Image (cartoon, rainbow over all chains, first blue to last red; front, side, top):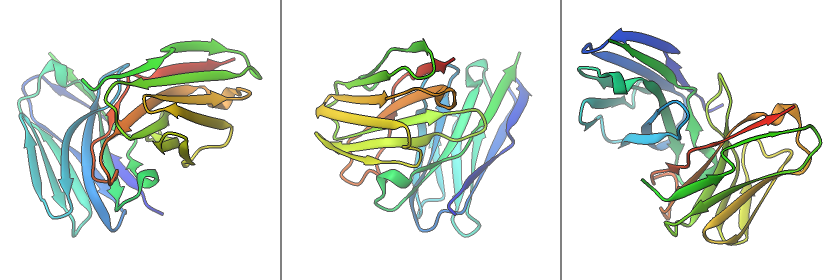
Length: 113
Length: 115
């Protein structure tokens, strides 16, 4: 069964610190892997999207990496800010299948001043 | 921000009553989706549409129906709401010919409570 597992479930760090969120998946083959940010009470917003042939993608202080061999992705947040407090969702898309996109359950990140 | 509006944003209803959630887009995107989000679960696909009057079931479609009579509107109906359908519902849109490669744009969500 295709799955996307994220860890940790929740994380608390101090403002200004770095952190790394993990995503393990079993979807194969896949078209792309995305990371979304979801603020409380809002819809998810895309941060990065990587095809299977890419191994890193940056968006400001957010850097996503992908290891297709080990089926792992990570999202690294540099110099965290209070506005980074949110849930971060890993999403894996199989080829040409609108109905089979798989969402992880997310990591809840809290940034403390 | 993508032009996606969900209504209502919040609704409380009783078991057995019908409920319709509306998703309206101004982007003229071809694909529209309804997801539900529950604690401990990733977003799960209920139904999706790939054009006017063209819809298909997702992973958790039981108890739900959809309709798309215009490109811009996608309706989700719970014919007889149950407590297990208490959830936050998200509409999403995509414009890619291959939706697995395109970006999904989400609405703000509709929180439904069934008592």
